[in-house]
Image 1 (tube, rainbow, N blue to C red):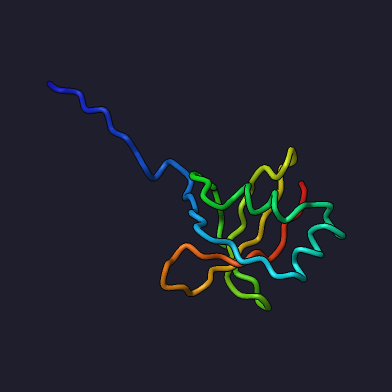
Image 2: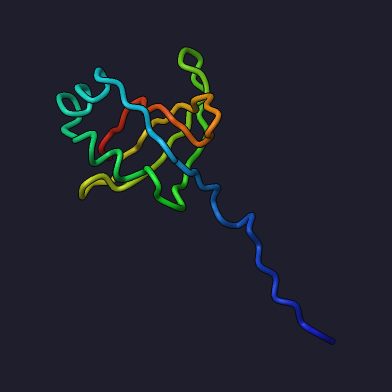
Length: 100
């Protein structure tokens, strides 16, 4: 018989696409003073980057958010993103980023 090679897409972790990232001034300040991160680097690490793996997290106070691991500068960070209703789609607001 013929052998079939199956490609399973489900085995790959879900990935997120960020077309635009909204970062408030308060978050920019918090990134730099509390976490030692440059918001430009956080932005560059996730906007327009394919294959970002994520998991949903349902927070009682803040609602549903995506947790993404990405390399910011030269360190691995946990990045918290909130979905934004936008006609363009794939727009997210940055909650924070935490060096691992």
